[in-house]
Length: 484
Image (cartoon, rainbow, N blue to C red; front, top):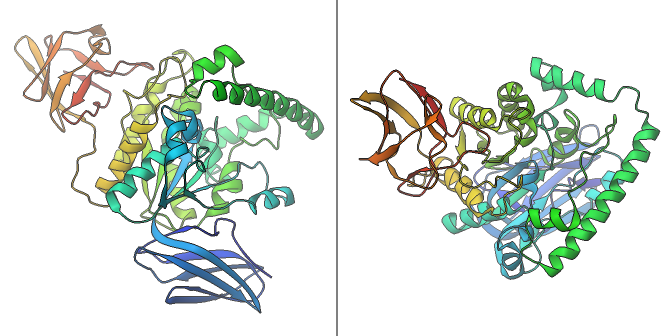
């Protein structure tokens, strides 16, 4: 018996300059050969895991696996850079549904950019394994990749442009997920916040039989299928239809799904059924876009986000796995029920506290009326630029301005940032002194606000702020609050 994990297929991209993990099922000694390198490993308990020596970028190659007379040959294998792409619906958001995405998907071609999308699965069973065997890596060819993550596409295009090596984007995301879905149950059980998530889920499914859940799920899926059919028909007529257009003409997407003990979105589950299905495939880093579904319980997010980073690094056997997260953009959610500002601050704080992390400020990339902003080009590019700066040491400054100091200056308050501000732009309602919108100007790269100490100066600390502070390279400043 010899089966490689489903993530190994023709057209795959393997991570350069690191040991190349190859794994799957076998019942005897397995030999792997890739170009001039070779490795062997004895199967244990029906599984095998071996590591080929590091290789530079190159290809195409053949990866050949043999075991007790069986042979598997994977063709058109490239060695280059691999990035995981995880999170919820704004990472899942498909290229062809975004601004300019339909045209891009129809025309774009680049054999050096390839995508693998992990199936969304609630359980690991025979039906799931059969579906998984149908997955494969896809090179970017015209018309073939419109259903891939838009953020992954734009980030991948930027990496290809800058690095000039093969790039693989390994997409592992599900819309509407909480961060606890993507952390192992064993880790959740060690944290008060994780135990609370597990207990809350257990309470939510009390008294719901598997039969009742199955019936509710079938009815729900029928509603989803009808909505998708309507949305697709609308997009055929209106290729540039936005979320608001679809909601107006087809209705809102059916939500939430039914609750049950075997539901897809449950604590620890997607880490088991999706993340671990591709781990420990070699990767340079993780692009993470998630947090919207945790905005109603922001107090737990810091511990859980920190735990997720550790869990994924362990799963992919890479303590140096870079993590670049998208800070939530603006959105007019109910401030009494959701705290997007708190999630933004936690995302920034965790990425400052944990080594090997960066955060992309997206304050100017949101849509007050749509949870899923239409334009994913800036988020993808900003995340890739942070990766280029930090993971690859490229000479660019992709960081948004951060407040680093402030002091009274006569009848004004002067604020300094990590990089010079260039301008105030648009609505200044999100810049406040003592809770009141303030007059301000940019002078010598600093922000000068009308007012005297003592005072509290705050910027963009609400769910739906207006971004108005920008650096010379067009990046929005991070939200802040400071007492003077």
